Length: 447
Image (cartoon, rainbow, N blue to C red; front, side, top):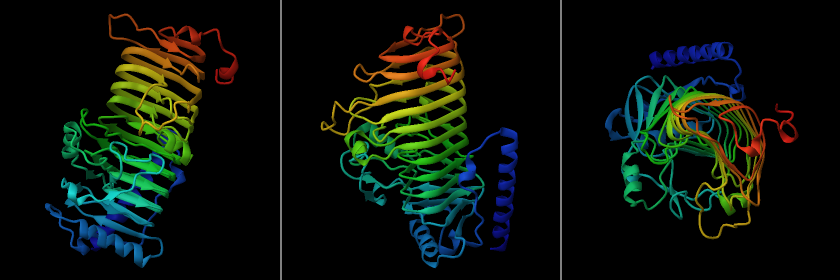
């Protein structure tokens, strides 16, 4: 026991030192909103009968360990140590003032037996499961109404073994919406760092109705053809910091959301104060995305220093009729993309609806979108910006953007409709609605 306690202490100190050095080496960080906490009280999953042989089901051990943390309420909280080994488990709830610590070589592996996954109510801002009406499967790691929760370690792995779920989706045999790897609801003071997430059944990390969330130094992996395996989806959440991570998945790397059509409008909780910085990754879908579920509104998003490879769309802001909500003050800068189908897409015709009861007159408002300092190689389509006839997108400001096609091919043109704004130093030359001489109005302070 003393050996791993000392190992944890040394690793946490090393992590804190590395984090402080990275601030100096890499520049600005938002991670200070949720500092790393050292827990004096420590327990091991082995103390509760955990067996890391990859075959024994450890759901009971995880639940008993967390029950101990929840009810003894040690001062400063408790660290649950997961030593090297493969711990097969069903879903379990986290609790407040705890650290889930995965040692090097530790794997928390999700069972592939759907009967081991309880159902939970749909999110009120979605009104139903995202894929199927009614309830949805609970996430592998779940929490509601928590504070001071840390998931960290020595780059141990949380493996969702998602292929059985992906196959059910492909075969259209899903009865309920697939589970996430991590979903935290109505929670604050969340830190997720130094962990590998792989093969999620659905979205990987989903903070919803949360505030003060830091996700940093994570690796998120899933095959390019795995359906809907979004990397990180902050949803109706505020003060979220996503930094210094590598994401290679089958859907959007990072997608900021805030509820779905009439349910999101009624719930009325926006996402705001979202920072996305120093992300590298690849996906057949989007690198940095807003939407398409934006009915509560998405405002004040900053994404910068992003490196994207083998992408569907580099930067994608997406919404639809029936969504309502406002998308405003979105800034994306210092982006490099290589081998992308589309460089920049801002569109009002993306995404499905929960049912036929959505209000077609609930039109989104998109304004104040600032994209600058973007360089792309092997980008087939430079940009598409299509607003809505009855709700044109305004204040679309583009600056210092160079999107090159394949060598020897002619650069593609921009395509735009129902949009206003300005562009300066954009190549290929932007559409007529965004002419380089139009440097006043909503974009004047930006340029």
